Length: 411
Image (cartoon, rainbow, N blue to C red; front, side, top):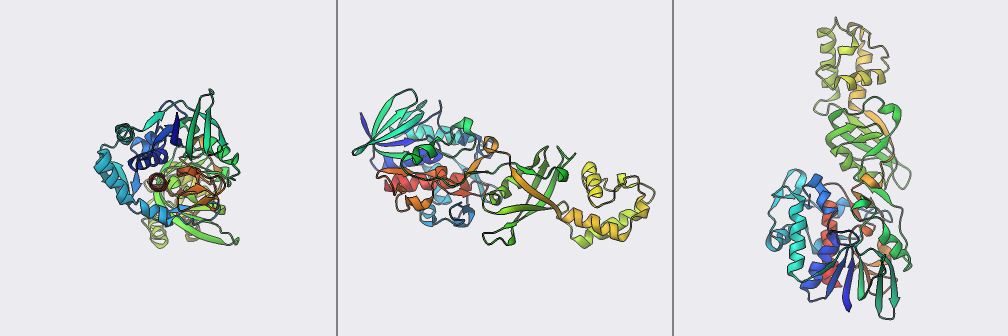
């Protein structure tokens, strides 16, 4: 039996494509590699599903081919407000806006989104075939023959690649969609994990594993002209690991790594205080703690182990040094370390633990009026497989919903 539209990938963008196309009277089938659909959605937002962000705009999205991608029309076709209305009015999910515009289901469970979408798709009569790992697509005159790993075949007039990127491969997005696209003459930009833990200079983190701190982090990097610039600043929890840094502030800021060279972070361990305020605080501590050694100097200020590490970073090597012997100049050095601790970012911690893939099919190879391939008629793309990625905070799921809706409406 020939289908009108075969959607390869049962993730967020694949589902919105299928639902929208089906509501427009199209015959669709979803082909999913894993035993269940929407497995990656189940893990988003720490299992709570940060399904969109009310602040989403083109400024929150990036690309490798071009840093700013021309996706305004796609985003405007299905805004965050549209997404919330869709989930509330059609899927039956009550949305709850939290800090920084992040939106979650009121239940606090990603399973609510997964079940809601699955049941809604079934109610529309959308066919879903799981354990169908597409390894080959052949173009035959006006149709496509889609072949699975176990030799099953499906014929379709139109094919949508909504296979995701390479992040969390065990959940289904193993990068196979890129290979399918390449066989039709498409290229793929450099791929980089984002919303991920970062590897840093060993000497800047040695002995700090497990320490958490509420900080403010400013990212610096070289732009396309090789000029070092300040990129952005985020606050949140920082976690030191054996390989580098993690925590929500790192996830928020990791988007800069694929698009800037020589990325360096500047960490402010006391963001509630100015440099001068800290200088006065530390001078007062010199007086109060004059009978103690530097081992006790940071007690009650920052994590004790971190404080001792930062003391040595300020070139006060001996913790046995009397606090009373601290000079004003040494206190200034400590202030600088507390407010501007610099760490160079070496790499990410890889696709296996990354939430999103930066890079993909270049938008220059896609018709942005309907997301159809410019190389092969009736081949389409949606979601993370394209060279578009967003900041942390619901922006990437919003791209999946918006691109899926836009494609489903125009296919």
